Amino acid sequence: MEPAVVAGVWGDVPTWLGAIGTLLAFAIALVIYAQSQREMRREQARRISGWVPGGVSLIKAGTPLPLPRGRAQVDLVQVKLMIRNDSQELVSDLEATLVAADGGDIGVAPVGWVDVGPGQHIELDQSMPDTGKVRDPVRLRISFVDAAGKRWERLGGELRRR
Image (cartoon, rainbow, N blue to C red; front, side, top):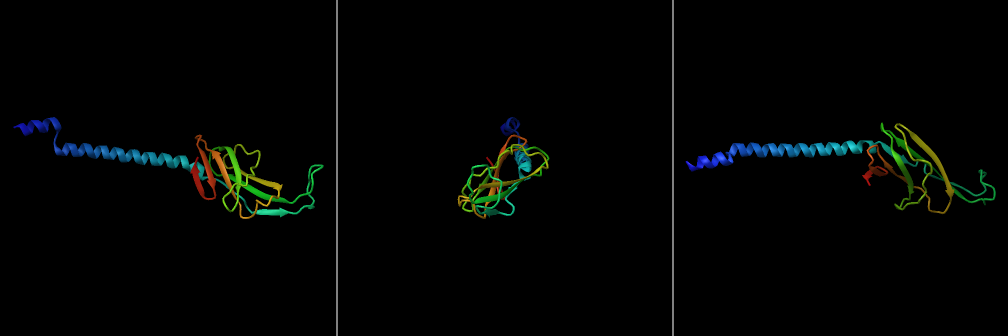
């Protein structure tokens, strides 16, 4: 008779198996929900891109260009930079840096890009004195804050959270 009392206090095997199954199902549902939330956060960031179409152009000294009075003629490097926001939301605090073939920052950041609106495409021609650092191939590293306030960084096809 005592085993019946113990079974009444602790339950029986089918009840325990049912409880464990319920806990496992709940844990799996939480994991799936967390993954879907993470993917939703990444969705906007995936739709932001930056690149350097056409590479680097060298402009030799003496080429007629509008220069401020008193500036000496120097060799210049010209690069076209593109930023594209294909998401449905604003991205802000945008930073862009040219990256050399060896992975080092060239440090040329375009000025005036703070917010990029939904569906907005920005194109900028950047000219700078030729120091010999900027040569093809170059890539554009962009860093931005998404609509949820998360900072992201993209270099080529690689997207990561900062």
